[in-house]
Length: 328
Image 1 (cartoon, rainbow, N blue to C red):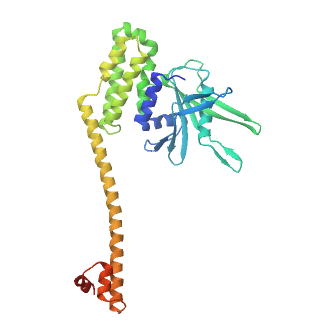
Image 2: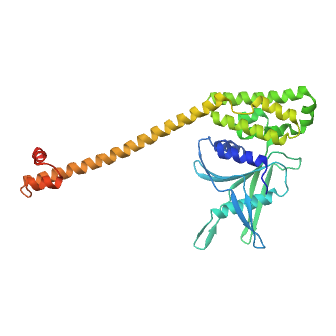
Image 3: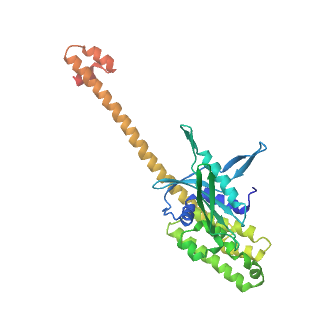
């Protein structure tokens, strides 16, 4: 499957700010992740064996494990348009993901399917709220639910209330059907720009409260502009209006704050590593000193008992006779 600009934005956010996807997981699967859980990403490239013997490469949008109270594996696809073949692809991806982690024990192959969901950037009236995959085997059948997230149903208020910042770059899809009106009607275009001004303010507030970093804010801004350039291609006023509000590049003060965040993080990591190394070195030195003192005391005892001469003990310890006499 060919990659789209929206796939690229989706994967960029996963790569640069992976914590943002946890709110999406909460929304899709009813989880309650705090955003502090560890996320482990798996490979996205998979090779499907076809009947003609050829291998076909498929790239999933995301496959990751969240380490909360217990580990759970998730697979989320981002789809820009409703597609009847989506379920087939979900099953292909999920089955390949499960095979990658499969285990054989006592002639039993165990495969664990990930929790899969689809994020539709556009949807139609016929797009379901949930889909299912039913697997029928000689031993019985099993089915599981595939949650469907329809981005165009989310307003800015709900996005920020649920911390669904992952949706922010794609928010322009909500207005796609009105693009023609925005191009012709200056007043309506100003209303759209006012919404993006509100987005900018909210991101600034979250940054000031340290709920997101300056880097995260700038990444979201950049992704907003990328989606606008692609989605509103041919609608110059909309693209320019969004860029005017969000900014076309990282401002100097933002770049400085990002740099300072990096410096602060580096200092914090350096202090942690320094403490760890100091403890390790202290333990090592303590052990070494303890061994040395133990050997010295043993040799001194042997001299006092007449088993060794002072000269023999001094030689074994690599010390002078004067130092040996002090130990005695």
